[in-house]
Length: 334
Image (cartoon, rainbow, N blue to C red):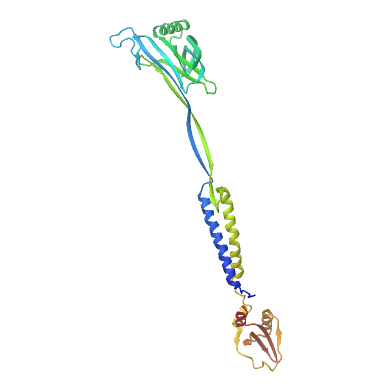
């Protein structure tokens, strides 16, 4: 059977190339994993329901030379306005069943240091009931009656700077919802004009829905999450990169240390004439050669014999020698 010879060095190079290629592949997947977010979050806003309360109104006057009875105004002249009638309407979408209560009330107060001090109050009318989807209530503001009642409170208390706050307060309760409240006040400004504050109110219940999707990536026909890829791919890249790095490290040429570094300036090339005629004293190391040099203070003669570098010191009838493998011999060995 014929034996197939294998070039060991070439096989190692091929194997290292394969390891580096696989490490580069996993490195590419690692970059892709870190460029992709582990998850995607989508936020959607959905309107659950809408509520609206509104007071529509019109005035009746003692003098119709300017405004006809039944005219709806943003501001009513207080001196000629006798009655303001209105209709409060509440509706919700989508329709729902619930309960409501409303009150037409006047609070009397005086102001002290910009703080209201309440004297008394009067409930003029109240309503309550159940509804499905919507409801409405008729409301009447008798301006003349309000003025007379205020004068009675002022005269009865002696507080002639007392004021009255007349308002419609509505509260709606639907199971599973926050209560809907609205306060519509009839106010008089410094010019003597009457107006309603907050006659309309809208409330929209919006729910926030968050949908989080775990992002995945494909590797060798297998699907995995991006988070898994961020852990797996760098680890695999490092695993396949270790053998080439280790091989490169072990193959790195290490420059041998120069044993003779401290003695080089005292070394001369040549061959002592006594070589061959006197048995030399063999030194074990370059350190021993340095000690002898310090003791005898003679030059160090260097020559090459075979594959050895010879360093010799001649002291009278004694030769001290230190031998090491020559640089040429080391290159051949490698």
